[in-house]
Length: 135
Image 1 (cartoon, rainbow, N blue to C red):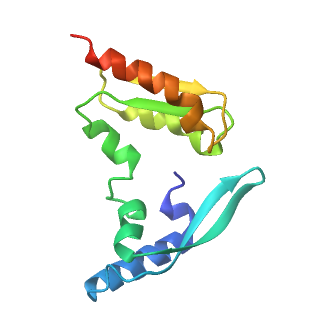
Image 2: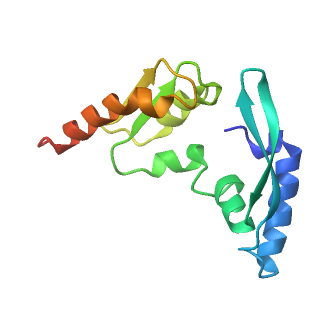
């Protein structure tokens, strides 16, 4: 995930979302800034969501902050990355921050962002079977 500091518009919308939450408007839908990656790099997106949902993803202390939360994991982690997925570029670093566990698995599949779930399904199923084995 690109850090909010690298996207000033995200910082602006985090502040606006916080203000709306303080005003008791946490669940009112509105427009918020996001970005995405595609074949030509990053592009802007105008989301329609609630301040609560926006903050749950972009606020630095949110559960979506992989760098801060991966070290807190106390369960095995399976991470599937796509070789043609620009959002997977920092995936290994996030995975490596997770609490070490002999059952953790990092798998790279030949896939784009939207293809990763299908391409990684067999790896996830194999990992789930491994979790069922006595350790």
